[in-house]
Image 1 (cartoon, rainbow, N blue to C red):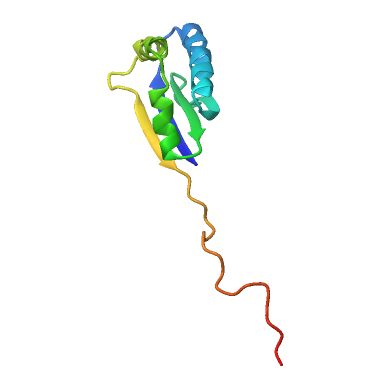
Image 2: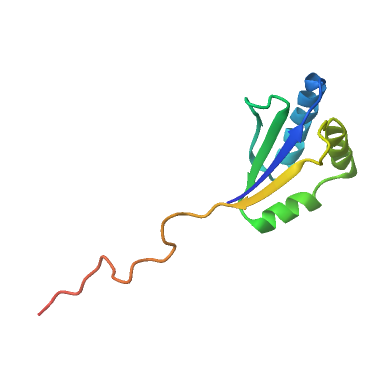
Length: 114
């Protein structure tokens, strides 16, 4: 599973920001993103984190190629509300299972001993 997260800092226009993020959620869902969320940082209320998942890295790359010009304009409108001096931070992660992907060497089926 592949996860993308962006941290945005907003100014006082949080109503406009939330409206745009609702539209962004719809766009990302349409082009293949799953489990889209928007979280507000309680220690820094002006900081918001958007996350979504795609099954694979390839799906993430496809998602970006499916965006229309109108979708990209929406992204620009969201980024214009970003109030911090530095650009929004993006983090890309790959979920790694903690269990071994390999099957055990011995099988549950055992030949009877003679």
